[in-house]
Image (cartoon, rainbow, N blue to C red; front, side, top):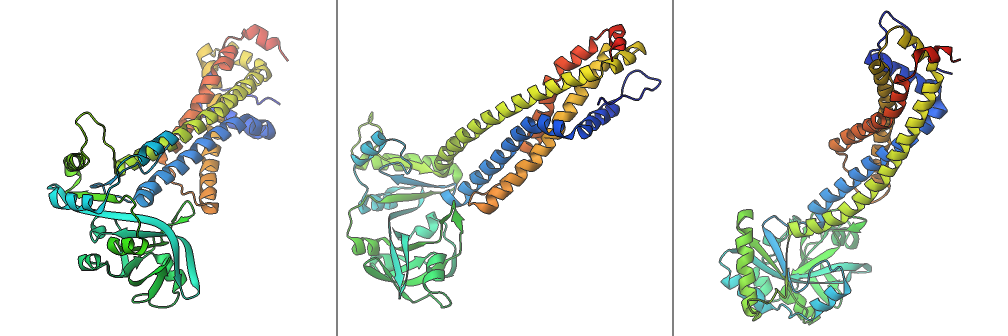
Amino acid sequence: MAVRTPLSNKASMSMGEAVRIATSNLWMHKMRSVLTLLGVVIGVMSVIAVVSLVSGLNQYVADKVVGLGADVFLINRSPSIITSVDQWADAQKRRKFHYDDYEALRDDCRNCTAVAANLQKGGQVKYGTNYLSDSAILGFTHEMPEVMSRELAYGRYFTQVDDERAAPVCVVGFDIADKLLPGSNPLGKQIRVDTGTCEIIGVATKRGSVMGQSQDNWVIMPLSTYQAMYARDDSVRLWVKAAGTTALDPTMDEVRMILRGRRHLKYADPDDFAMETNASFLSIWSSISGTFFGVTIGIASISLIVGGIVIMNIMLVSVTERTREIGLRKSLGARQSDIRTQFLIESSTIAAVGGVCGVILGILLAKIVSLTTALPSSVQIWSVLMGLIVATSVGLFFGVYPATKAARLDPVVALRSE
């Protein structure tokens, strides 16, 4: 059943009147309205949900996964993230970094405010009958607190003397103290790390989990203690801290020059090691999340196009249902631009309602995903505004043809229709 427009002294219709008629049509034909808005709702909902999840992940990766200061960079013989078999094979042929490379940087680098070295493996940590598997076992030189953020809840870090004497001491993550020694003071307790033992001298504050993976299941001991315990000739990772972000590039250049000289690389030879900063890790993650975001936006765009086509079809039906009304308005003096504007406002209103529903459902979906999984979310205001603007634009674009068709109706022919 068509909605008849109340006539007034003016043949033209105000925007408020057009919006009222559009919403009345939606309310009168509820099932048709739901089907009409479905494409727009799904498209906008997908955009809002994906933007919220990707933004949350980006923030989470920057804060908790990477965890490097803006003035700290890493050096290793291979990149931390390897994307191909050939890249892995090439990295295995490179010369390893050893303790003397750390000493050379520590002693010769003038721009470096701190240089550290570490090794890492997975292992088992045990106390009494309690144990944790797949714990991260790290060996670090005493400069660790300067290059890697690990805030202590209580206790202390190991010192240079501990490192020089290969003292059997360690700093542990929150999970080690909470799950292996619940209800007791862990300081001074001896824990078993694989085949060796160490005394707990510090416990870190809780960091939580990332993607369901705990960030508190680790043990850090002096690098000399680690090497004595495992007697392995792995390549060490070097950590360098510059004197601020402005000094980062000059410091990296100096470190590169020192290491290339020690590795006897010719001028034209590429680096046979990787230097990575916080920005390097974030750019890799951004490229991954950007690809995922692009694919999802493409799928959402298809939904919006389908929704726009449905809106256009419904508006054509509305033009047919209201032919006599249009003829009456034109006979009273309404111009083509008045009729066209009326139907464009109605189609935009229909799409905007779908956009609002999509925004609400998208936010709810993102929050539900965050509550039921390890994926964090962060709702962005710009994405909400973009969703509403895009939805309204879709209604406006796909409403042009029905509006033009309505505007061009012959009033005599239209008045004869039933």
